[in-house]
Amino acid sequence: MIQFKEFTLDNGLQVIVHEDHTSPVAVLNVLYNVGSRDEEEAHTGFAHLFEHLMFSGSVNIPVYDEPLQRVGGENNAFTSPDITNYYLTLPAQNIETGFWLESDRMLSLAFSENGLEVQRKVVVEEFKQNYLNQPYGDVWLKLRPLAYKEHPYKWATIGKEISHIEEATMDIVKAFFKKHYAPSNAILVVAGDVTFDRAKELAEKWFGPIPAGEKYERSIKPEPPQTAPRVLEVSADVPLSAIYKTYHMPARTDDDYYAVDLVSDILGRGKSSRLYEQLVKEQKLFNSISASVSGSIEAGLLMIQGKLNEGVDLQQANAAIEAINQQLMDELVDEQELNKVKNQAEASIVFSEIELLNRAMNLAYGKLLGDANFVNTEGEKLQAVTPQDIQRCARQVLNPNNCSTLLYKAEKKEVAVAGEE
Image (cartoon, rainbow, N blue to C red; front, side, top):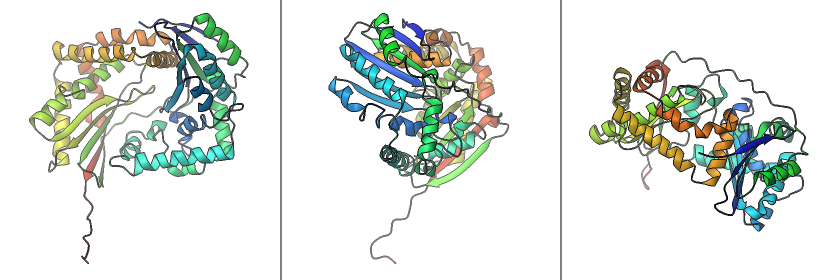
């Protein structure tokens, strides 16, 4: 159980305080309610670009990292389709430095042409290195638009095309910042060796004067139901052929989310899962295989992905996956197997609460979903799932008409031998 208190500043910034006096460390976590789903299709990759730009200097602080490092702190950030999250850890006695740094870049960035150019090049290089120039790197660039036809989840967080970042102008960048990076669109979590009163005092001092900005109201068209299977076949110079399958599933706050999450665990969590036991160990069709869920705030995806052993036919391997899925739809899972995956999932939640930073992130995310206490109720929701829930959700989600399949065929390039014509 994570204990916390919360309040909201006049400018709309929601603040959560979690006291933990077991070690002299403090964490500041700032979650901005903006991700790649909030981008325009002609200008993608901006949420991720801002993850980098926020370290390029703010109004009063030319280099973000230097003052933090001088007081023994460290920081990082990440972007997803749903959120952008910045966090820092430092000795609790120096916590005010964290408030100063985070509030100054929320107030406004420096917005220099040089800073934009530097970070633009960094992101473009990341796009090339991680998505275009490594084996299987382009899988999600192909799979997302196969699974999603309308919703902005159809492009990756890095962006739909490199050109969107290469051609990003300062005017577009400033407009994106003004729209999304304001107190009324953020959640601050202060955690660690700090009292509630001290955290409130510092929040009011450093964040209170920042103008609220216009409240961002999200308006995204829901993805229409998928009514027929979709298949895309591609070839690439990769070590092994692979199969990637996605199934549309309920949103993160839906009552059935936990049942579908456990469906994915039964199918492909670890080496005792059905897919691994039957397709890797017994039939030896796959070298590796797993299943998971995207955890998206809006309707997301259950994903199955596996790499085939050499010589195995893609169609044969795909049919084997679907046969195991069909079994889960046709037969009730027994209590022992269900309890196993329930306990694994609950253990993951408990272990995630060991680290102070994870607790801060979980509180922020829960607040974004509507209730900071969300993290304290997940175990109960998992344990409440019944075999009947599993079968009902499996039939809905694993329906072949709800599936998009990427067949990724290994095709070795011919290497010219010296002296040959």
